[in-house]
Image (cartoon, rainbow, N blue to C red; front, side, top):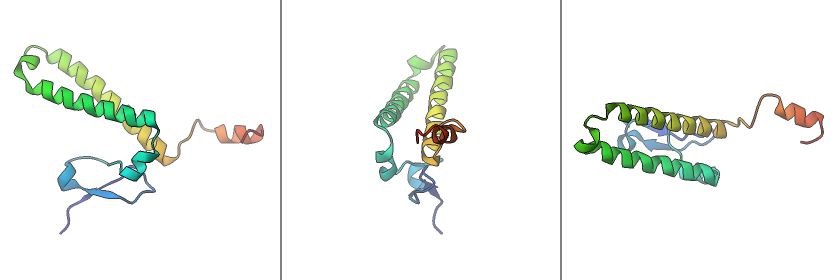
Length: 113
């Protein structure tokens, strides 16, 4: 029996990855879809990933954890909020949400699009 697969975040893309290798991820961004993303988004994704590695290393050291529960909970809350915004942006980017409701109709009525 094959293990469950993790899908690419792009609904039009049919690529998947092994859940055994990646753990408990909800989605992946395959190389093809990664290249479609704007450069600023890719830089932000890399920056968040670098911060994740740095925080994991610091949290593993006892001297950074002692007596700093409030600081770590605030950092955790802000960090999770940043990843949630990135997830929302990626889902919106690949689902085709291009702007506010009615924007296309407004542009057609005024001859812009």
